[in-house]
Amino acid sequence: MPPTPLSLLELNNTIKEVVDNNFAGSYWVTGEISELKINPTGHCYIELIQKAEMNDRIVARSRATIWVNTFRMIKPYFETTTNQSLSIGMGIMVKVSVEFHEVYGLSLNITDIEPAYTVGELALRKQKIVQQLDEEGVLHMNKELELPFLCQKIAVISSLTAAGYEDFHDQLVNNPFHFKFYLKLFPAIMQGEDAEKSIIEALEKVYHYESLFDAVVIIRGGGSKADLSCFDSYWLAYHITQFTLPVLTGIGHEQDDSVADLVAHSRFKTPTAVAAFLVDLFAGRYSELNRLQEEITSKSKELMSDSKDVIETKISIFTSKIKELVQKRKSNLQNFNYLLVSSVRKLVHRKEMLLNKKEINLRLSSGKFKEYPQNMLENYTGNFIKQLNFTFANNLNKLDRMHDKIIYLNPEKILKRGYSITMKNGTVLKSTKTIEEGDQLVTILYKGKLISVLKKKSL
Image 1: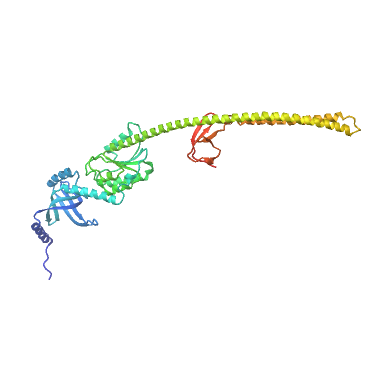
Image 2: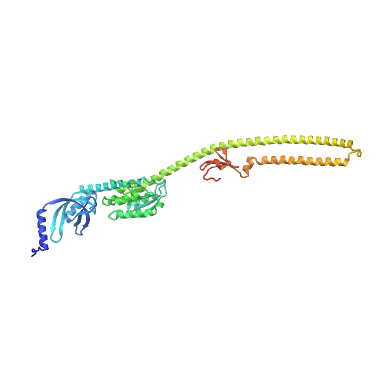
């Protein structure tokens, strides 16, 4: 025969008696909040869990209750001390009494809480996240990105209705220098349980248009530590470290840096501080550009002045050489003309002597002709004179063409016809082989000169 069974009520009463007899006092217990619900009557119902250190497996679980009268005292005390609200995932140390109810089973009745434990847990959790990011080699990745020289196109992650966003927008758009900034808002939830996921989704949207922006700004208008707890998230921080654009934060809290602040390219206390930084950065870049412009202008004027002196010297030397060459050619022409006239005279004289000699020989050698036919001599002489005149006129024509050619080749005449002279370091260029890309060239025109930098050459 089986033993007589107990009813469930009898068993539960037995358990209740054992619990009441053996757990009459109170106990300080640590655990993590996995569920939290505040009843309309004001009671707070919590589920506490404990996880294994190695794999986060739940090794213990228990229901707990903070009755309304106790919760009214614990809640403000805890929030004032920690600047946090009780929330899921938070580690707490509470004073409990163990209770067993015949219908509702085992539960813990929370009568007190130790805020210092939670503060330490949050700091430890934050420290562990930073340490993990560091061990993964990503902690400073976003900081290593370089801000564009002119940071104008800004992707903003914030709540559209946040006062911080309005301040940020107004300070950039109405900056005293009238610099032009291009802002695009990617709305996100900036506090609460859904904030982490919302901000990450906004980052992913920005990533699809990253080529359109210079930087990303994450801003909100301040709040309690509980409101800002999403910025101590590992996954949000990890997404910031991996982002391909510099991320600037202005979350609006003056005390501790969040993990998001620590991994961002630049961290600022408030949204307006981010705006001031961007305006000051632009002003610095603008000032640097003005300085460079003045320096380039000064150097260019100095170079042009030096080049002008060199060119004028070269032109003077070139003109002098041309005049010298023309004078030399003119002298040569005069000498040639003198020699030509002298040679012609000698030739005529020799021909006359030869004719006279032939006439004498003819008269002596021929008994049939007593006199040289006068008409033949005249014809021969006439043809000779015509040939001589033709030769002389042809040579004079050649001299005129040579003179015109010298005048035609005068550099000033050549420049006037649209030609130019290109020089490098004062040397006239005759081939592209003597120049390289990036060389500075000076081109002399009929009126004025050009200074240029070679970008491309072809043989």
